Amino acid sequence: MSKRLDWVQEEIDNLKAAGLYNNIRTLGSPQGAWLIVDGKKVLNFCSNNYLGLANHPKMVEAAQQALTKFGVGPGAVRSIAGTMLLHSELEQRLARFKGVEAAVVLQSGFAANTAVIPVLVGKDDLIISDELNHASIIDGCRLSGAPISKYAHTDVADLERVISENKGKYRRTLVITDGVFSMDGDLAPLDKIYEVTSRHDMMLMVDDAHGEGVVGRGGRGIVDHFGLHGKVDVEVGTLSKAFGVVGGIVAGNARIIEWVRQRGRPFLFSSATPPADVAACIAAVDLLESSTELVDRLWDNARYFKEKLRGMGLDTGQSVTPITPVMLGEAPLAQQFSRELFSEHVFAMALGFPTVPQGKARIRVMISAAHSREDLDQGLEAFGKVARKLRVIQ
Image 1 (tube, rainbow, N blue to C red):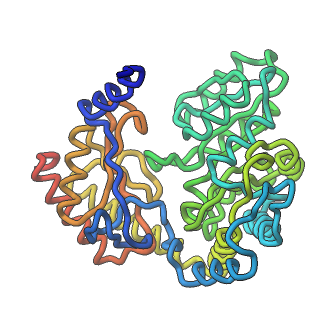
Image 2 (spheres, rainbow, N blue to C red):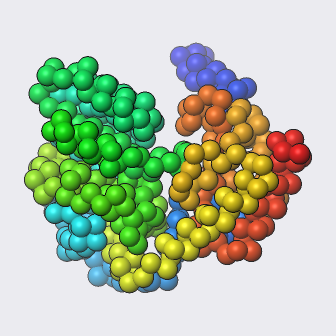
């Protein structure tokens, strides 16, 4: 019997021994404040469904109407026969919502990063990237073939150092940062980063996956939050978190957006987003433009939950957004904490290496506008009970 794949099982066994094996749970219900997970009704603190739109009646209705009118799938890539009226409408609406010159929609936020970065830089150029940028940024950078230099997390002085060390060595330079960092919930100092990149005449790109629908006026994102309209060259976003659907966007300078349409490989070589999803995204823009109620409720819930956790003595790290990490340190403790929460009907997953650095394992709580105050109080009670049981707090 061949042993050529024995190494795979050995690696999986090593993950289990280190407490890093990811047990994937299965949902039997729509997204919402409560879920059916592995057959059990649990309070949902895991999803990126910030505004509770994933099962919103207006979103569902829009998707159903699109299914009737446009069918199930696009049947082609965007550049051949896959661009429907809905795609163009969504792109125009998103550009107007975000206050940018143009936008293009792709299959996911991951695809958006792998589409735009390689068309902006190549082997003769330099990428300067925050050391904690998302995996999709890292993969987009690698695909570009450009050399990559990292600067210390959100450290503008270190960004200046990296720029100085590489001055004059490359054809052009692209500086990339996440907007909201998904593991810690902290915010990039985009205004200060822009001051540096504009002084050195360098391209600036921000991945605002966790800022879309969350930060800025009515959820218009981090560029709006800092008042940098027309100054950031590229914004990448996702439609799978606050928007509650699926898809990615590249927004910003019209010339860059046109260049992505001409040369972005996920745009050219992967089928378009299905019409029902696109229609639901348009409905999400309608909801965000009509009222700030959901965004306001999200932030009210986040402030309340964090304040109560900290009052218990739990460490929520550097978060200034609804992303709420409960820092525990070692992965086995975080996994045990998650299992204990699940037994208390609270679904909150443990995150360990390589998702976060070694020794910084945590439970990441994702607060939503869908949570009622009673939901939050029930979750807080469970966190306190488990934290005392595991002697995280007294």
